[in-house]
Length: 261
Image 1 (cartoon, rainbow, N blue to C red):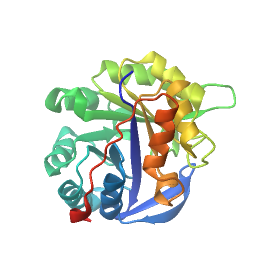
Image 2 (cartoon, rainbow, N blue to C red):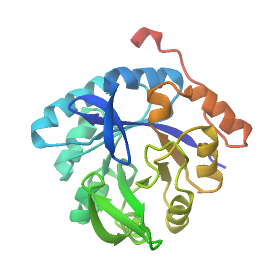
Image 3 (cartoon, helix red, strand yellow):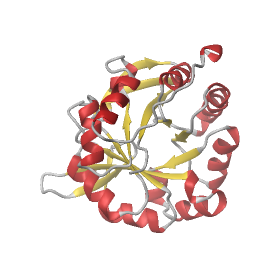
Image 4 (tube, rainbow, N blue to C red):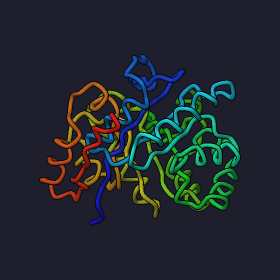
């Protein structure tokens, strides 16, 4: 079994990290660059920055954040939010991001996935899928920060984005996001079984067992979390030790970066 990853997620609003419940009730969690440096120091495997209120007016703020993060951290990080062209992708990658993620723009113009994969390589293109399991059991894709239903089936969309060149899928369940009661295992497993690229489980992490379940039962390749790390509930290395004890291969070494803190 390949080494699994724990990914820290920063929802960024006006230059600050925020966290909500089911995409609403946002509260401040700190400065993104300072938090990124701390997470790197504490052993996180990767980071994702999502500019949740992205606009062209805010783009300079995001570029500055990306550049400062690249100067401070030593792990891969992904940036998304408001990226609508391969030139937008290029700007983030040239500023220091290792990967970019697209969501609404990919649904609105699926060709963007292929354009990005052709120009930068599939390994740089992460398609984020926000999905809600509806009362009838269907799994529907939502866009615009979870505010707009699309009528698109989440499994079919996951399959399409991989065919178009996505190298990874970041799958967030709107039903479980922020509640810390566990990931949406049926949704995660359905998407993981349908595609050949890594799937990142997102939405609902409350403890290490939830992450273990997402990998062993949901068949995810990585788990993403925010609240349990932002507010100090669970130290990252403690979570990794519990996952390793459950038989999940983890990267356990982490360097001491006190000189950059």
